[in-house]
Length: 381
Image (cartoon, rainbow, N blue to C red; front, side, top):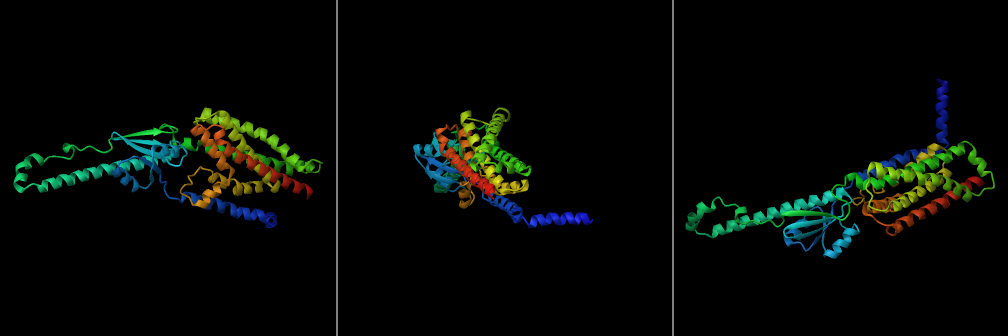
């Protein structure tokens, strides 16, 4: 029993002399749970709709729904739909309501159709009520004698028999991207690809360098005349080659075997996944330069990776506070996931996603420079 207590005290002493581990043990879980509470505590999504030359009675009903509604001309509606500024554009042609949806996110498409169906029912109900009141007013205007004279013929008359014609008799749904066959998971597939590549490359690079450090290999390397940037570049090229091969195989399996949709060029998708893998690799090298044990790598992952995963687009952020959307814009996974969706779901070309790729490579440069500084500091200490 004394040996057990001695071992217990030894472990507690290790934590006592490592305050960073204690802080991460507390801050990491609290941060992740807090992010979950904010993300999952938001309200339901309100679809963004645009009306193109709709009748006033339909516009009035749409404005009362739980949705954002604006009136636009056909050209402006098409442009905003293509830029994902609205979720659907509505127009009316010969009693047929034409609903043009963006289409990639089936949850938003369902929200749009829910509002549209509710509006159609309310418009039809208002029409029936107006006709009923009109019929009642006409009957009251008749004299009692005339009412008795025609009572037998009008007693069984319904609104439909009086020539009721609904404002909307049919709904036509057109998809700008995707189709009605796409599932809910198809919209999140590209994000999951980016997340898994990012997480696994981060763990592989961070843990591998920690293993070399504990085995003494890293100390011998640092004792040689090799410069810090050469050391980081060598690890980047070695792990980078493996990471790009891994990302390409994962991407191929997701498209060919799992069945993720891909509307764009496979080469462009590979460029995005390779860039995202290199971001994760350089971040892993930076963390490995700061961490002393494998446990600390996992703790850094809670602080640096998990929040990125939660804010990368795997959860709709449109209903979250503005500061959380700003925080999402500060993370590299966000731009990788956005580029993956643009290519795989909307068929974007390489020039279309150059802004996202540029931001990813900026992160690569920053993480590489910081990793060089961390190894230089370790070498001179």
